[in-house]
Length: 83
Image (tube, rainbow, N blue to C red; front, side):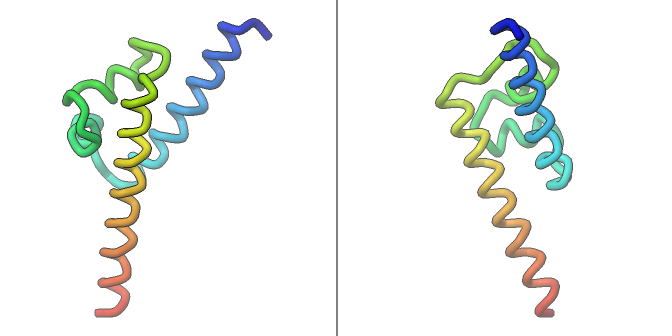
């Protein structure tokens, strides 16, 4: 496999994983970008393939936003269960 094909496959895996998480949270592309502290259309541009990979700093923001939102969702679910 060439390096370009390998990069494309890795990008597809990353996008699929992120999109699965985002959809479970029920948040829009734009809303997720804002939650991650990115420009409103940044995440959507990446998912659409307008660039291969986010910078390391922006990827960290994306991962941190997912973790924070998933923890918040789990907390909300625990409140509903205990009510």
